[in-house]
Length: 99
Image (cartoon, rainbow, N blue to C red; front, side):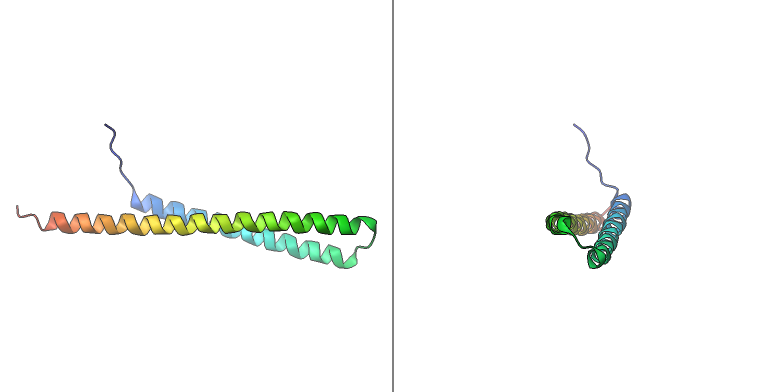
């Protein structure tokens, strides 16, 4: 039987790395939206409406993805706190065992 072990320090670092990557993605998305808005203000022509519709659809999908990534981040934090609580409970139980 394999032993399941969790390195909570590593897990915590992985969560921080995930948060950093997620934040960079969100910032890149926001920058892209700003650039498209700037382009939109100076662009006129028959293809503008098609571009706007496509961008709106793609933007909604990107926001959905960002929201899903946020949900994963929340779940990782919850799991980390649960693991930490279990570790503390186990340590407390072990400390109470008379030797």
